[in-house]
Amino acid sequence: MILGISIGFLFACDKNNTAEINIMEPMMNDTIALNDSLHLEADILGSDKLFGYSVSLTHTNTQTQLFSASTEKRRKDYVFHSHWINNVQDTANLEIKITVNLSRSGKTVTKTMQCVALPN
Image (tube, rainbow, N blue to C red):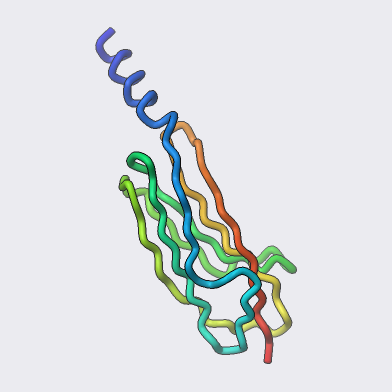
């Protein structure tokens, strides 16, 4: 009985959790020249402790994932900063996708942004 109450309390704590995802870089529809660095910078703020996040950069023309990072550390906020060097052969539409895990039960919130990588 006590175990059931404890488990119910743990899941009840995350059901109303929310998160704000703020992508500082790149800006929507930015263009990245060949051999330039795409700066991926974002912060995430939860209303309560979060259950990790994932970041991906996808070449949407080919659905190829160019970059990914994630963490499962429980925190109320995260700061993410990384770089990807543009080495595409053809113009590439890119999608940055950040997904935050709000609960143990799989509740998430996602933010996406598009930019373009140029071959020369």
